[in-house]
Image (tube, rainbow, N blue to C red; front, side, top):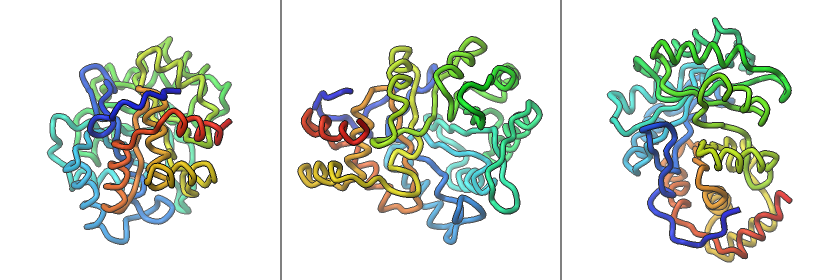
Length: 290
């Protein structure tokens, strides 16, 4: 755990997400721009576009998305709001899943489905190649992912994918993938209260590989903890801001992608990057996941 109370730089500082692609550590996740249940269009498309444009105005240069959000909805919003894309903007997407008519999340893990997923992302984002594509794994932690990583590596060799990442994977699956191709980031469920990935996060930090926690604020049910509320009151910030600040201080390879459909909430998330927690605050927060 990092407990250094040195003042954060803008947007939490920077980290090299992929070779030649350095981003601010506070990014933006687009999932919540879709309709309820991440299905269908937003109730207010103009508000969704405003969030994306404000993210860029605030300096965010790392946007996380997927074509199965909606499906197709968030990627088309990103294209409408931000295309043509600035050179400094890194778009990260994921493949490996699909939605049915009821909104269920289903695996799409065959080589053919992974290729289709990449092509759909390219079409709806308006890109010829995607900076980083995460393979979203939907198996047990001990399942082999070698064939799927090989399929992604082939898409990389074709120039459709710039760099490869992984999502919802175990340490063993990360190691298996790294024997096939370089992995630039891992996107797993991790936050103050959900810390099963502590060892993996630290191992990736030693390798210089980015760790991108999804549901950094607890997901659809926000984090709730007496310790979190106490620290928030002491530092004069919201509990959610403290939870984000804790993640930024957890390790320098942590990149955040909190999502929101509100400009006001987006600004609050970005402001959390300026919050520095003392060693005592961090120790108190560590007990939540202990």
